[in-house]
Amino acid sequence: MECWLYSLLQRAAGNQDSLHDARLANASAYDLTPEGVLQQTLEIVDDSQSNQGKSTNEIHSGTGNSVRQSTDKMRAKVTGDIRFFKYGIVLYGESVARKDLYPYLDVLYREPDHPTSHVKIAIVDGLAGDIINQKSIGSLLIGEFITKKIRSLENMCVFPEMTLETLLPPMLDPGQDFALPYLSKEGEDIIARGIALFHGQKFTGNLRAEQGPLFVLMTGKWKNTASFVKRVHPGPADDMQNFITYQAITQNIKRHLAVKIQRDGQIDVNLNLKLPVNIVEYARDNLQDKANVQRLNDQLSEIMTQDAEEIIRTLQESGCDAFGIGRQLIARYPAIWKSVNWNKEYPDVRFHTQVTVDIVGNGILN
Image (cartoon, rainbow, N blue to C red; front, side, top):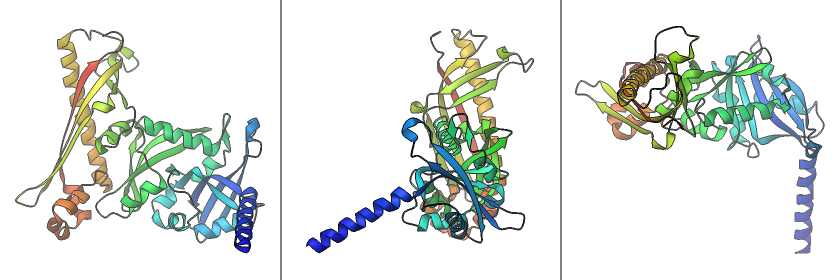
């Protein structure tokens, strides 16, 4: 018993020493060089003085024929082992994402000590390593900044919520595609470019940032807030009185999606959203007039329905089955699913979409 206890204490002490000596990787980025070789860029964070608000970081990069090989090359450059932060961020450059994303994720899922449940993932327009090489923005180190930015935009429904863990099921599902945050670097700023759309495991298209909130609502997986700005009056674009800003009351949104197979084999999808909203900004006011409110309801419903139809067109052109129509066929019409070539059939699916806006509040001016 004493030998067993001594051995256990020795292993525990060894693990503590290993963790103490480890270098913490908070952000990683993957790109392909012009020669087609993988280049990995890591942000290594030193938290030894974090209680004094003096955390520092250093950037390392390495190339290789695999993710593990590029990581091992960086391990040879730094003191101590490299461990990955459980709330970190992984970025993939467009060159990697358009080729096939899964091979660059495989090792992250296979290593038992690599975190997945809270790690964010995003696609970068251009080189992902360029973002990591920026090191910091304001008072925040680059990994912390990107992670906070993505989480904030998820809460605002600009980005769909996704982690390494939740990414794997749709990535391997033949009846479901996925979408990821899409970032770009403009000067010293890192901006939300939009949403990266995937067909299978390849990046095939994107939505604009302003399309993000409606897309997220259409998926049925919204978070805390979703805001919209729409032009409802003719006239100059620089006149604020021609625009209205409103926010969806997310706890009261109603979404209905139904897949139907017609006798001729045509696949029809009904996707309806009932969207109660609060007016945030409307310089013309007149919202005490019920007729004016109804006019705005009708106008915004028409605008939002057209926006939804544009989103669906982009999804079908990209082959991205983000709403899981194929999954519905697998579950409800297995014989149909087995008889169709979904890659060819999905772009021809008929979507019937309706967004109904209902103004239920207009702030303290109620």
